[in-house]
Length: 262
Image (cartoon, rainbow, N blue to C red; front, side, top):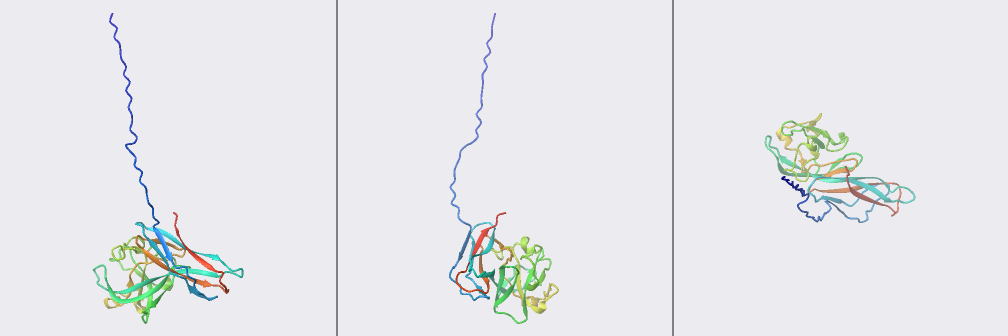
């Protein structure tokens, strides 16, 4: 009688769950840097005065939203020292060689300088250097396709809300990276003859358009202080203090530039 033996072989598999690990140290630098003098500023009670300029720089490689916030840090017992604070910026406007059908237009030689509100309850702007007779500052809101469809012009005092307006093609659609690498999006402020703007429409006659002063960068205004800083951008803002009817030296005001947490 033949008895056959059956051998059972058990095979188990080892599953590889990791081929190797590398730990990479990261030396993380702060993307936003803030610089500014903290010297004492001489002010008069019940008046206004300008603080020291504050420089905000985006050293990183992505857009970063910041919030510029003013905080009164000490007051006299008699009452508030600072009634209000806003922040202003400067912008140069320039003539351009108007060449319809070609882009971008070449910068001209005539310049004016303006001061405008970056943070504050309302937007305002004024010419501080080389004002022109019978000219007015305007906000020019572009269409989505700025080279195909004419946009709209608004006198500065007509502006309500933040800049750029959400319906402005320059807010998110028209990319100005080639012209203005550190302000690819934003609002345009122009300086044009009084007679050139009628009911929101600008006179685009060649000779008239050549008399305009155009933006050299796109700007932002936000009543809550929220500003988008683009890679490589430097924004210089100056605090403008409105003072109460008090006097003394027990007043100070600090400006914070904080990250906006989504």
